[in-house]
Image (cartoon, rainbow, N blue to C red; front, side, top):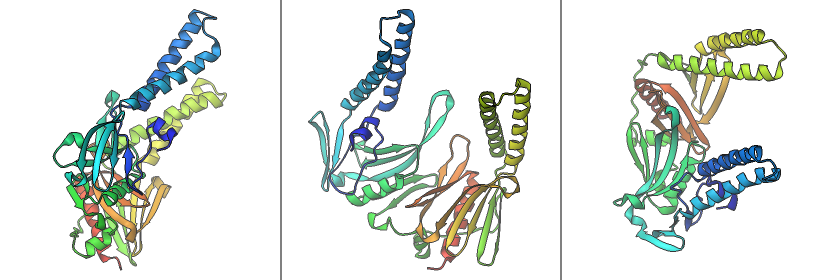
Length: 360
């Protein structure tokens, strides 16, 4: 682990060779460092204002940085270090061994999504990869905690292969357990060999329509009900705030004209968002996913080769009561969100059937 990555607490573990050492932080070190930085900065500014000449001005900038560093180092000193080797896993703290166990005492490498409730009822979705102990929960080792899915699958797969343990997933559908030698098997191959059953209902649920012609199948997904309302409300008001702030800084206009501009932007955004929908196109070789606004204006598109898709998991949304279908490949994930449970299940069955029909 590089000194900078360790300092920031953001390094992903590297299982390209064993032993692999991780430092599962039990405290939010970076956040505590930021708190120390802000508190020291405000205190220094207060002293500088009340007692001019007491603190040299350069010190006002230096002291918060020193406070940040000290807070981070204090947190790191309280963290244990876990070493994973071919045959055993052991934890130490300041050079003193805390526990040691055989690798076979661990149930597998678990990847799960956890919805964490923050301040002001704001939820955040965390991707957590953990070396799970079969009997002693305190010996389970957190390998990664990330709010981004980028690189999470690689850590999960690399750890399972290196430690020769099952790779375990928790999804909205339940538990999935795969042996290390099965991780590189594409989803299409698993469907064709009967490991996963493909059932398709041509009757799509509300909000989803599909059609097929000339070797291509197209699916249109339109958010309905509260999902559409949330998109329009948050999207429109968010754009209004940005427009108001930027126009106030950069446009020499009276307040009344700025408000008219904001109103025009809001109405335009609401009209465009009203027509927001997702398009999924499947050909014998590729799957493409795009997000479009009214009139077919495309704001996002991603294409994946069918033989690179390794998993299609139904996962929970982020605090909206929705579900999502996450299509996973080694090159990255594609997440189709704001689905009802029925819509997510139908879409997954559709994808499975498409993969079953795709040529080898």
